[in-house]
Image (tube, rainbow, N blue to C red; front, side, top):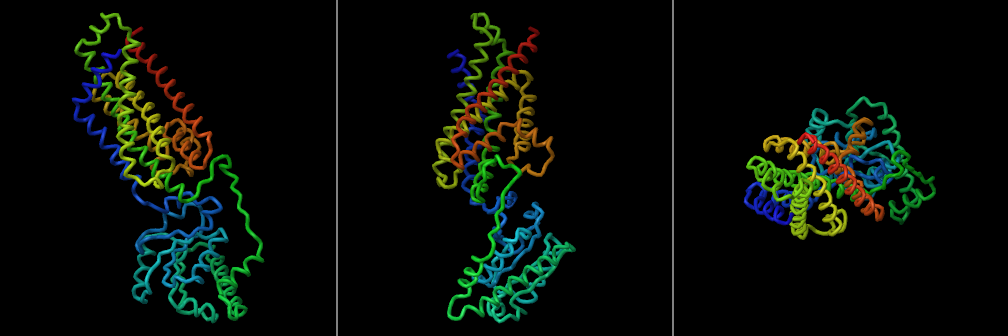
Length: 418
């Protein structure tokens, strides 16, 4: 077996494609993890924290329609005031639970510039209303005569526009009353004291209660880890295919027949190939381990050794799966097509590219057949400090390896007409 493993690894080292995937996928995954992407959690704003969070939009032309998937009334805000009172107004709107505030921090805009942005938003985006807060907002809100400091444009026929208008009037009334009571005090401080006497809203999530609750920052990190898993899976899948190609070539060149003459059983031969696939997974994990030192530790969702352990276990599953698929197909081209199909479909159905929360129950059931889905769930558990994630990691890896090896052994015997 040792001789077979050594010869397999030597053949892999002679393949340019093997070296390409060995370094390409870890490097691309590292670039993904280094990317400082925020607001990915906007797709999962169902938690209590998410329901009262203002979404910060970087550019004026960025679309806010993508954030409206949870049924709330989307309001795009151009905030040129940047004051405590404007912040208070927007936060009070979000606290009602009915509105989703997407804010763009801008410089004071002329009427022509505002009209241009309004036309672009109406034609190319989708939201319930557009708000513009000018630098005069504080003075006008305190005086109770809001005119140029706040402008509201209703851009849809949603019936909740009346609720929005009433909520906004109530908030402006609170600011006006606080200004009368403030005297020498800061108005924002008075507003805070007034709100302490109001009933506290408690939000409890019923659906998905057994799932760990992540902060928005943790959701962002988990999403980036999912993208990295998708790229790394590509490397593991084709790593197994390269090992399978050695088996296919050895069968064609009668090498396998000569090996049988040495009284080495087929079980030991394929075990040696599976161990070769494990070595390939270890090599790719080591390259990824070196690349992770280029990533700030706070960008990783979990500790670096734990992350690399997850990468290695995921590699064992997919390298063995693609190896057995290649052996059963018995053709290099078919093996490559099967590997790409397995990678693309499994990554998509596991929810690595986009969340599957709003899909049908059938799609969700299929999703849990994909290894990456389980590894994302393990990531969530470890991020929240739940040690059950380690047990789950071992059990999931062992379960998939047993299933793959069992189906593979039956398939190989069927192929050989045994």
